[in-house]
Length: 399
Image 1 (cartoon, rainbow, N blue to C red):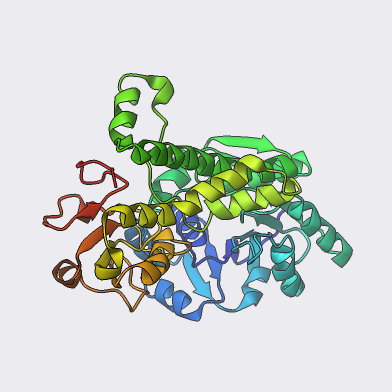
Image 2: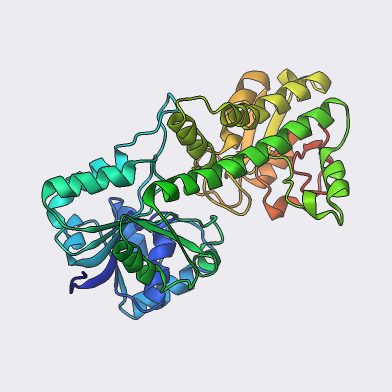
């Protein structure tokens, strides 16, 4: 059963990297969309037609749906009551002990329980610890509120949201066919490709997806270390073995595997398996250990204590302004102990006031390390030695 409301859908956490593209995509397909977010500054930016972060091709869509009157944003939680469907997109980080908080989503929803009412569709879209959907179902049942509750994981990559929201299949899950059908109708506004699972299956499907990517990156980084320890160029080897050989086409290059999802979700899966996930923990050691590996290897050929080192790119991935869980900052911390001084720069990042200009880094530093593979560094002209584990510049990845 659905309800008549002021909004077709309200996105909770809708000013973030996942929620905002979803909200404006729904609005661009003709739905009446509300955004609820605690970040007053981000809400103000969205209402004025500005993105709080970089997402290609999203600004023009935001401006279009605002002008059409199909999107609004607020910090007032009561907007939930005006929605036919509520999509929850909130962060689910692990703690300092690498343990997930299985109650994060439930706790946030409990604080807003009074604004829900019978007949609404509640869609959980955050990546959650397996069993969270069942916990939310129990919470609302105990509250006496009859909701249709679905888990429909997001699957987009930052920087590709406005493409992938419309092209990737959408997994929908719910306890009954009625719930799955209702969730499918909602996301059918974006894509015709719908895949049905049970909630627990869908929760694992999301964690498996991110963990699989994280493990592949770890394998590549381990291969890189093996080759590099023997003075060999991993990326040259990788490109040669993959040439016209489909079974190796998916081998990624080496580089920092970071960001707000892959490491965190691997640790969630490890916790789910009672910390017996040896492969996941090994992947974590390899990927998180790459910055220290690079610095230690550099010390074999350079007197780092006498050198000023510049890190090019502080975002967690290329062409992004997102620094969440970026390993460039781990590299910076290590170098602050090992090098004479460290300067950092990034043409996309705007939230780090310690960044230097590219001109200053090139003028003052003795050694450069590419931390994020921004395309601006591909044609970099410099006489300084450049550590390029990504082989972004096509001059080899040997350190």
